[in-house]
Length: 351
Image (cartoon, rainbow, N blue to C red; front, side):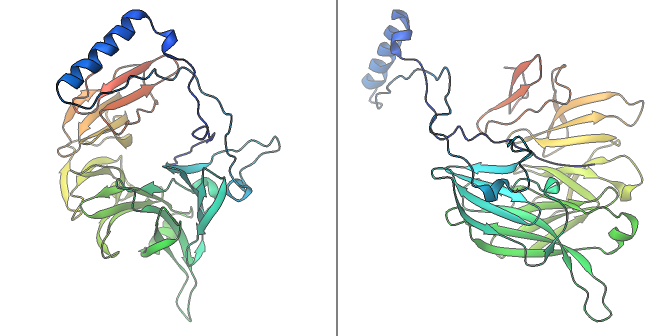
């Protein structure tokens, strides 16, 4: 039940150049643009200068990541594999099991690296992407660590949550959450951790194994754990709810639940078990849930209202196992090998 977010990054953001000019446009296009500009000026609005959309991109001027960022992830052919990264403005935040590195994309230089205070567990393939707050003031990442035993006390595991400042890449604060020792007794795998989002004044994180899970809300202002929700593996966060699956103590198919982001209290619960389900954020107030139902194994793929769990719309057929990323404006862009579908992120309707 791996939950990974992999990003193979080709740094084309630096030195992108668009091909095409106004000469490629027909007279009618130019006349319409000129007319639109005059109308805007007549209404007292600032005149808008029309620009052609880019038709192609070039890698000229691309900046390579430093060797430290790709250490252990380069194959014999020199190709970088499974790089886990978040991008924000001119920085890349590269995650590994035991560190997060901030890279300046304008120079390709390593700005800073943060590590957990204790020994990190897991492998780089277990790392999940750091999460940048909407206002760009924090970058948060998670580490699963081992705490050494003292005296007769046995070693234990903790989830360490580290927040850094984007400009410097240095740690701003960190908070730890103990992982129950009983988890190791029933499951020998290393827990997987993920920053899911920001809402209700909290950064919301989740940690789980195949049979155990817990979600926590950490106060952004005080850096303290404000709430925890046992057995809940959260995968999507909106302003209205943190949505994920209640694994029901590992004894049954997941049941979708929505939690209040500020308190962690249950807001809604699906009437029926969802079976094997994947959940992701699909806009300001929608989440996408898809998988196989418990009864009869019927396939489902729906957009749900995050605040109530009610179905808003069905995702068009043919997009099985396809991602529908939100463009942070108003559109979900769904792609498969044979389809490109745009959905309205409020209504769920096909655009």
